[in-house]
Length: 157
Image (cartoon, rainbow, N blue to C red; front, side, top):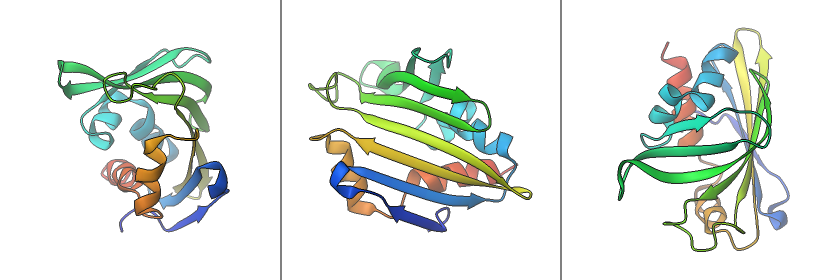
């Protein structure tokens, strides 16, 4: 495992998992891994993030797929955005992946905490009941390829 030095289960009965990692990079590099297209292409299977990041604004992750280079894979709505501190959004699988996409979603929250020249990233996912994404994440928990990818991207510079 590359990126997750300490992780904890939080309220699994509520379909919630929390991942935590100390990343040897400044906050702005960790933030870039999560909120820029350069970062998300490296950490989320080649998908670019698109949003104004204003609370309530739509957020989309698009990349290569069945509909070409601009396939919608995931969408959602920004809940909170405080640069270099916290980013939270409601995430839905695209309609092509989940016929119940409007009612099944995951609340994603990233909190960044400075620790000297490093950054502690706390990533919490809280899935609605019946969301298949939870079972997928739980199967490999406490491992997280996504957290490892964020760590690699941030520490590479």
